[in-house]
Image (tube, rainbow, N blue to C red):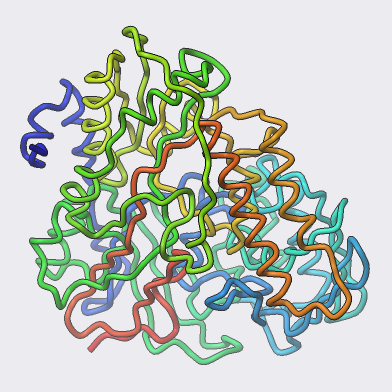
Length: 507
């Protein structure tokens, strides 16, 4: 009989409950009474640098914009760039809009865009979406530029849609508000809203009246950092917040149906198993972990039925991924009390609860377990350093570029910049590289034909990755956003790049 959520929490190791109670607070200053407030689940990790995951905050606030966007099928569409053409094997030529001004008054031109892209490529921590591709850009005219990579890259336009490649004015690179050389997006982006105040508790935003597109309906709003899930929900119920970035599944029942927006998402919850060191360097013990994990109580109970049973790396939000390939794990060994260190983060309230279930399942199979739960910004360095045998993570598989290849290359290639499994497998590297080979130009190709070949190769690579036991899928999340009565135009984006938009309004 599945444990109830109350029983799961009661069974938590000593200290875990305290880690779950990371309370957030609301900044009561800066925004005029009656203005919309959004409660954000994560706090900035890098002073809002676009070269970090903070870039997604800038996108969700409609502050920073990219050269290109993506349609529902993941194909590029115009944004700050109107046209993009593959000039030769390793080069793409882009034409910019000629009517865009940065929020600091500087004109958007090719020199500024090239400098921005080159700054990202030279960053101390290169954005995942371009890590290892050798991106370089140069202006070829006032509003034209060429972007090159070391090797032919058929999905460079999709990469340019990543919030981590948001275009900022030259003024953003003058040392930042701290004077330490950091990139400062405040007042230097192009979006319909501009940040006018940034503090440790949140930001205040005002409408950009010189925006090149449709003007924002709101004259401004506030975004508060509220990492504690229960605090976010209480804020919506009390009217202190009008939009919640992520409604905790455990508290969905505490909100009215009219306050919830539910949409499929490309986010997969799964276990990253350390393939390089510790007990799980043995493929047979990784297979034993996979055999021991039963996702059903997690999907049905912890996610309150608002998640889908695991199908692989890619879930039902990606219609093209339905034709999953078969794969075979090594024969599982019988665990003999091997000690496993399990980790996850508290910013997503469901993950610590799911980790309790998984730890119990692994102990029932014969492993010994130790759990570590912290806020994401604190635990990420240890996770990437391989300090855990098993790490439970919720990951959007198309968030960076809209193209699944970048998630495969980042998370599972030997040189991947987000390789939490420490995987270094020649067969995996070959399968991931084959995704780009499948995109080689063929005479008469249409973008749709290239996409179909590429997607087929992605599914082949998925099977190779899963066959190593480096990743065990647990659930495919659905996106649940909290929206107060009278608030309209809040985006439910499967790629989780948009929430507040120019169309957002409040009565």
